[in-house]
Length: 102
Image (cartoon, rainbow, N blue to C red):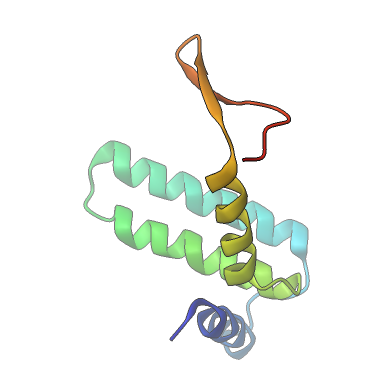
């Protein structure tokens, strides 16, 4: 199953189970909560960080479907943009060099 198929399956599961498919603001908040749970699992070394990251991905795919976005295509497009970017280290932090595309 590719990501596009997973995205549609996630959305169908939301429909089948009666989960939110209309309130985008709520879905962003729930996604934020899932990221927090993944971070907590990593910090506390609970051994569930993979499961929590899967929840993050599931919420992200559901939200993408709600918004009519092809997340796989968006990720591929963004990865190409990032691949072409140039970065420099400033004060111990990697920063994007503005105006450089290749």
